[in-house]
Length: 224
Length: 298
Image (cartoon, each protein chain N blue to C red):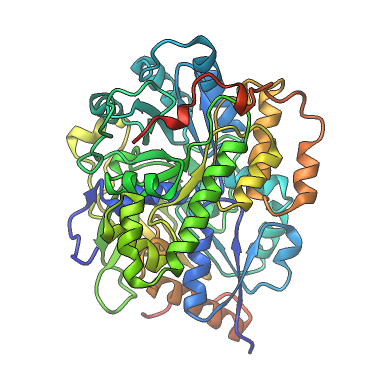
């Protein structure tokens, strides 16, 4: 088994932070801007950024179909924030033409936590991680309105939009899923790449390793 | 962030800088109407800057340039789902308070508007909304960061369509960052003196070899190749002011600048998107300028 080559979709957003995190963990990394750069990758990271912009740039770069095909054939993928939106089965409040890959059976609302003044950071408990709470940075974060039966919810937020802040159309987020996994797909509403804690990137690389050793999608149900 | 944040916390430096990090590799476009904001969003802008007059018109018409009418800001906020920024005058903390109350996503304390204070910039730390500020050199950038700016943009010379000033400012910041990183420890004190910036911040920057916040480019970008140029010179995203909506075909030019910013190191692609865009904004070259906006700010 060779060490995995992880592609990082590098059209817009915080892709360099993901590349740095993966590099620190010893994973080989390739920035992906063109379809030919998908050749030979063993996993993909879809970073945070503006989902409308990334979607448009994927379309013009001819990346939508090739990425969709790789995902359908079991390519492990980690999506953060905008990446979560792009991988979701259903998006509420997105742009009409925005493609979503439907890689994970969740319904996501864009900008659910409101405007930037309502962006927040919070320590969240991630059940599959040892070593204490994970520091979550939520930037105009999406929220998961629905998670299908095959989706494991690995963490939820305690965040509630206070009454004084509710004027920007935000809705309460308390108890909503912010980290979900289904097979080889991992998505977070927050930005693990913006902090120095590498446990979630490690979790993803472990998923990639398992996927490569079985060469099939790992089962959804496993003990942690 | 060493302490545990058990309860959700807003307006922290990490959260403020975080939005700027999400805008990296993108284009932020000046818009003066909700329709223009839609055009910008549809073309792939990562954010829009809501204002009443683009810099080229402020330059041409003169008069005092102030914060936009809140009704206009709100109209633009309703029209798009991407972040909306707005400008406050230098030192005009009351305008910034109003913009925060409106829920804008970033406040630009901008030299494009007429300064309200000849000595002091806004103390940006108490605000929950993040600020972007312009800089012409490293010292100015560090002074703004020490006042709480979460994002720095090169000033360039707004409203000219002439990229030369933006290039000068980016090169100046970049070469001073390199020189500072190479300086011996005892030299950092004289660097702090020369830059007129706090020595702690100078030491942090010297150790990291980069600014502690993202560095974007603004001022005079009018073509896809301009965007590619400033990205290759180290800008991490691009503000386009008058360059889009003062051109012949704004939707196509907007889209082309977005593509060229994302693929800034791919000349084939920049060539492809640059074809047949119609006339760019006519522009004013630097030596014909009456007022240098970049000189505003202290």
